[in-house]
Length: 300
Image (tube, rainbow, N blue to C red; front, side, top):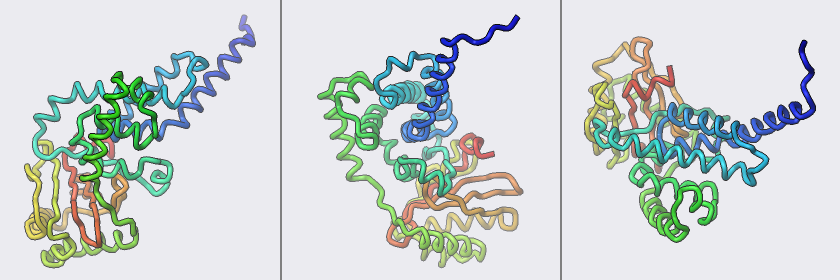
């Protein structure tokens, strides 16, 4: 005999529905925090899932601030992840770049952390310690008071202030500057594609800032430059060298990568790499090339 659900069960069911809605209201920001901390789409998604499980199993009525509670969970999980991944980062082959996040205009509007997920900004954040990164993001992005940050990362309020000041000074000096004109960015990338198609190294060089830098991340699993390449001349010749080897076998598709203009490169119909471009004052200043197949798996 099947019994009808009791009134208390209905209340519990409604409570869980409301808890899910509350979690979903914060999901985008939680992902932005995790991804800004870790630079990994896959691991960030795992952490968000773990945060949901903990949220689901908690008496949410006892939580005064769901936002602060969820950010605390995600921040601590990210710090634990960074501690366990420290050795892998230190022995990584070649430049380390974040897993590319292919975004759309709609996604950019939903993500309040749009600038902070740009490849240029994430590479800069990588120079901060995990705790500095957490304090900076919680303070500057989410506006937490130092007393709240102290509870989240288990450090004194005075220590959090010092950490935030140190991180803020570094970011102020290193923060990448962006050219917001999307139409000009599109035109520049179209010219970039045409230069490669024509094999015109001089035209390609003209699109680059004189002190441009190219970072390529193969992770030791795919051929890539082991060190950054500096200067418009070396970069243009390096790119043409790659293109000449694959001529006729590759396809370039425009994408928005980490809220930067970019494209995906497919060779023989298989994704080979993701390129993104930091453009400033009408020139390409930084190029980020992710070739490591492990970092492209989530895009298959």
